[in-house]
Length: 133
Image (cartoon, rainbow, N blue to C red; front, side, top):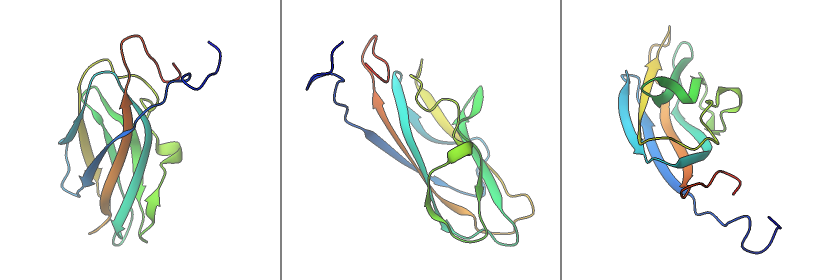
């Protein structure tokens, strides 16, 4: 299709904000609806990890790191961070079903802290639509 004012189609992004806790172990955080396409994920670390770094994964049953794979929470508060190489494989992919987002935290030798929030931005594509249509 030719590029026009109406193509590519304008999108309104929806946002889910979920807390990350050291006690998370396949802990349900939110549900993303079928046909969602995640376009951005940011981590907001608001408490330093003590002694050593901690890390967490964010995904769903069958793909526990679909959104974030082993994101490291640093020993110095880093504020808002884009995940870079920790971004999961499902970012930019249309979801085939409703997905309950799960978080699992690995403290390692960290003794405290290393917590914050994850902001997930997505849109819900219509039937037959993809990220670029």
